Amino acid sequence: FLSLFLLALPPSLTEPSYWDTQAKKTLDAALKLRPREHRAKNVILFLGDGMGVSTVSATRILRGQMEGGTGEETMLAMDTFPYLALSKTYSVDKQVADSASTATAYHCGVKANAKTVGLSAKAVAYECNTTFGNEVYSVLRRAKAQGRSVGIVTTTRVQHASPAAAYAHSVSRSWYSDADLPSSAHRHGCVDIATQLVTNFDIDVILGGGRMYMTPKGTPDPEYPTSSSRKGSRKDKKNLIDVWLKAKPNKKSHYVWHKKEFDEINVKTTDRLMGLFEPKDMKFEVFRNISRDPSIVEMTEKAIQILRKNPKGYFLFVEDEIDHGHHDGIAKLALTEAVMFDHAIQRAARLTRESDTLTVVTADHSHVFTFGGNTPRGNPIFGLAPKNADDEMPFTSILYANGPGYVHINGTRGNITMVDYYDEEYMQQAAVPLDAETHGGEDVTIYAKGPMAHLFHGVKEQNYVAHVMAYAACLEPYRNCPPLPHSLSSSSCVNIHSGFLIIMLGLLCFLR
Image (cartoon, rainbow, N blue to C red; front, side, top):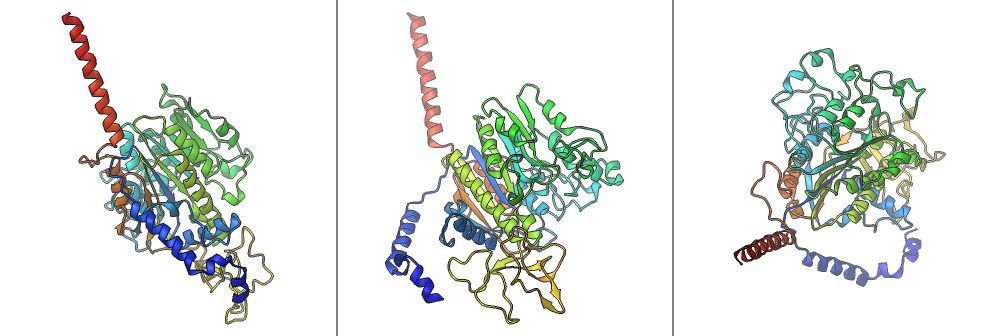
């Protein structure tokens, strides 16, 4: 088999000169690399929820194979970023963290406890009275306070843990609407996450899922009007969509729930946009109705086009829920999400300039996902390992350490010979039985480009991410900031000199 494979390879790949030339080009590029040591006007944080290193590697192969290559040689958009670091993802109370505590770290700059968002580790999960006085504030909120535009894009519900830490403070990541709060939390004055989304401060662009947490209990969903499980859930009878629309009467605001409406939005005349495309989380990319729901690529593009009109700059958070596919033990769901996430990063690169925009790509945590089995070059990423296991049965290259894919019959794992392991809902085999596959505890990667991106290097605590973004954009608590870009400094000087000349000419005319 190996001999046949080598014969099928382009001759250049077997020549040492091919690899020497490739490496020299890479070295030349590295030698020319210079850090951008000036202030960032804009910041974009891309968060691949659950995107561990093994997920990135498998995504690279999948994208390459989708584009007609063998896969391994593919360069993802994030692979082109010049600066990298490793992020230690543990939380204050967990060795293997959840998406809430990690979100507080990369948004707000402090490590926290599991299940809590936007709160320091002094807050205790589910204990409402530990909320007050322990709030910590995100870089997104600090950017808004300084006059920048801000936005959130997610393929989950917009009240989900990852975006929630950007604007909310809650001892429970699951308090999506007021109906989710226990009576004791109501008595102590805690507020649900959906309410905080529209009342804590103004977010200019909000795109994702989560309609049902925004409308009064029993409100039929516009997309699924006959579904009782998708109706509005709010007990306070408030329509938070209307609250958001009316919050800024002097700005042109729009709410959409359908892709047709979304596509018709004129970004030149729109100041604020809320798009909620599902009652809860948005559908996996594999199952997305392309006529009804926009993709993460389209949402990212629209957000940038609206936010970039602000001359002071913007902060945008973009999340893709790779995580849910992994929890289901279905690699195809996770990896196709990750491919679209990379497309969104690529689209953002076309819409921004590296000279004024710091772009950071990272993950909150990993998963117990792996691929191996001595597979040959170009092996389909969802395919089989070349040899059977010791039980004389085949196995897929992709496996999970735990999860719902554990199926043993009479003490023997299932024989997948007659199973379509390329199916969108094929559940890879797992070593340990669990209802849901778990997070992994290893470090995740931080990719960065743009102003001050060189500050990402080595192995760092996850909360360091927020501090670099704040420093690069000259946001609180940093005041000894990077200098403005030379072009801005020069133009300021020109404007000052021009103004001085105009004044002098006016005085000369007056003296005559």
